[in-house]
Image 1 (cartoon, rainbow, N blue to C red):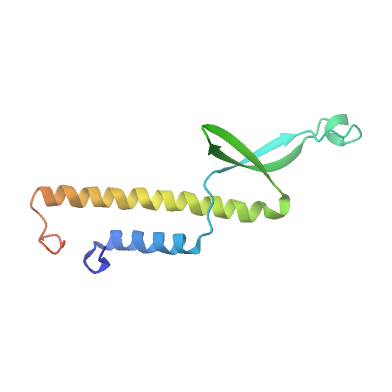
Image 2 (tube, rainbow, N blue to C red; image 1 turned 90 degrees about the vertical axis):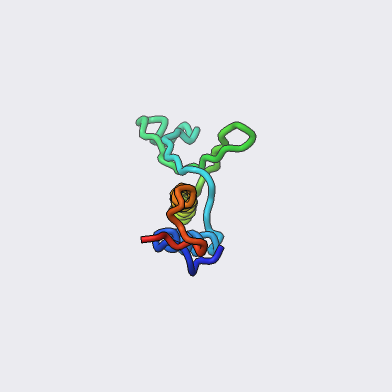
Amino acid sequence: MNRKYMDLSLKQATNHLARLVSLGSFLKGNTVTMKRTCGNRNCKCVKLGEKHISMYLAKKQDNTTKMIYVPKVLEEEISAKVKAYHKIKELVDKISELNYSELEAKKKGDVKKDNKLLQ
């Protein structure tokens, strides 16, 4: 796709998407915070009912949701990667909508051959 002839908002969205994807640092899924007991009979989670809070990465696999434990030291990194994936998904949806709009304009004859909208 030649970005030279793109609408400004489409150009910005594709540039942002290209930057995010080129980093390759994203994870499909969602972060989930859970409260659980550890199983140690002498722990406060059993004695006082104060459960441990931990993060998990939820992802769909073979029509089931898999939960992957995220250690405390990786929580920030994993959250950023999941957030990047959701941003990529949002940008793909935006680009698609802009292209649908362009298609509708072309169908009405409001677009020149070189893809620039007529004023």
